[in-house]
Length: 119
Image 1 (cartoon, rainbow, N blue to C red):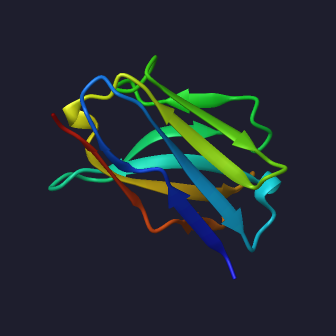
Image 2: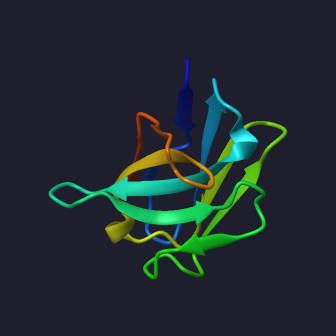
Image 3: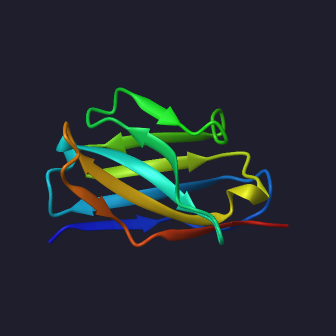
């Protein structure tokens, strides 16, 4: 049974930091690229950051470059999203995504974790 379990969301003040975690089970984690998406109320889900199966390459949405860092620990089947200098516009539900490589034929989602940036 495939599971992606996110944790680490919450309420933080502008300028603060949070670290999201996503722990995977039920598939071969090191064979999947991992991504973080987010969806704000009334908006489409957007890709925030992605990391290759090896962890060597990461990419980011322009809106989070320089503030967010994605990383993974294949020994722990876990991917992280370190979020610094948070802004109110970062408020959203954040979702963990696993995509098989190279063809992306298998695609799994977590249940999401709420991040709220507000004073």
